Length: 246
Image (cartoon, rainbow, N blue to C red; front, side, top):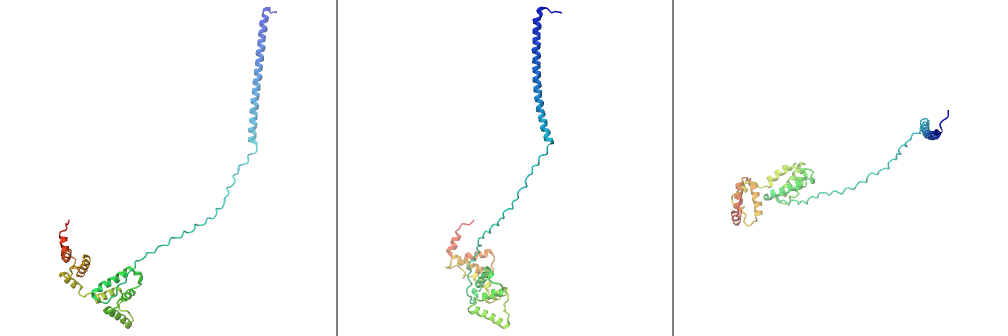
């Protein structure tokens, strides 16, 4: 069957369109296949690399070298710091007791000076005998010298020194060289006017008054104040009377 002539151009156009469309489809397919092939090639290469990593020899473990121990250098001990020399305590120079002649009026003062020295320098005496002999070294005159000489005569006769303790020495010294009636004499003095200040300073009067009070064994405060006030010079008494109190 033949086609009308007017349809031939239309068919030709249609065929041309179809051919062009088929060509575009073919190019797109070729391009898609090329992309797919490239993608497959890339994936294949990555798979091969992974396979090599999994099947290849394990990498040698990293061995950490042991720490190098170095022996510490010897430490020299610090040299000792020389200590500062300790300053020894210096003791004040003690005066020796005065020579004793045996007068009873000065017996107490002499014994007190000896005891003061013994208390301040006890390291100089190792025993009672040394204390006694040291004290007797000041018995250089009259009754004191005779009494000391008698003690050494007794030692020569018996082989033993007659006084063995310091307490015994004190007791015998007091019986020989202290005033026999010191208390009675002090009481009589304080009951009279011999102890008054007169021309002495107040300090000298006070020292003498305190010695009499100690010997008389006065302890009543009112008695002491009255007697001390009475013994002061009149001008001092007047000044005290006009002083405000309280």
